[in-house]
Length: 222
Ligand code: ATP
Ligand code: MG
Image (cartoon, rainbow, N blue to C red):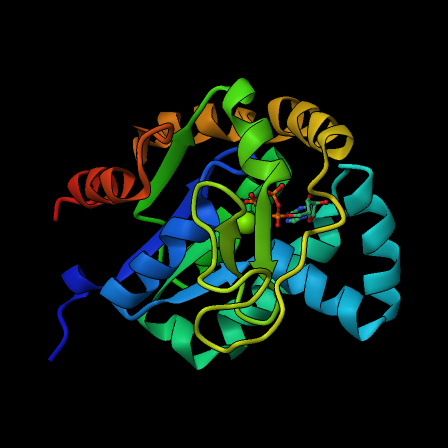
C-alpha cells in the first residue's frame, strides 16, 4: 500500500517562462499526482468560447489576472471532484496572489491535507524574453517547445500527436512585459508567505531542464 510519503501536495511558483509547465509533468509522472495548470484550464475555456473564456482572453492578453473568486472556485472544484487529485497534486499557476494562497490554505486545512512544499523557480526577467517569444505549445496537452532551444521534430507539429503547435496570443514581448509586472507585484509576495510557513525552496531556473529537475527532486528529499 502507498504510504503518505510517496504522495505529494505542492505548488510551483515562478514567472512566465520559468519552466513550471516543463517540470510539472515530470512531477505528475513521478508521484502519480494530478497537475492543475490554471492557465491551461483558462485557455481551454477560451477555445470553447464559454462566457468565462471570452472574458478571460481579454485579461490574459493584457497580462492581467482573472479574479481570485473565479480562480479559487476553479481549484476548489478540481480538488474535490478530480479523482486523480486524491493521490496528490501539483499546482501550476495557482496561487497567484496572497488571497489565493490564503484561501488555498483554508481549503486544504478543512480537508486535513496541508501543502507540503512550495518550490520557486527563480530566474532573471532578461532571460525570459527569448524563452517566451520563441515558445510553441500543443494546446490540448499543454506540451511546450521552443523554436530554437527545443524545436519539434517537424516544424509547427507536436512530436507525439502530429497535431499543430500554436504560439499563445499572450506570448509576445509587449504582453510579457505586463505579465512580469503583474508577477512581481501580485505573485512574488507569495514567496514570503510560504517562507514564513517553512515549506518554501528556491531553485535556479536558468539551468537546463534536466538540471532543474534534479534540483527539484533534491529539495523534495528524493
Ligand atoms: P507560463 O505558462 O510560462 O507558466 P504564465 O504563468 O504567464 O506563464 P499561465 O499560467 O499559462 O501563464 O497563465 C496565463 C494567464 O492566465 C495569466 O497571465 C493570467 O491572466 C491567467 N491566470 C492563470 N492562473 C491564474 C490565477 N491563479 N489567478 C489569476 N489569473 C490567472
Ligand atoms: Mg504554464
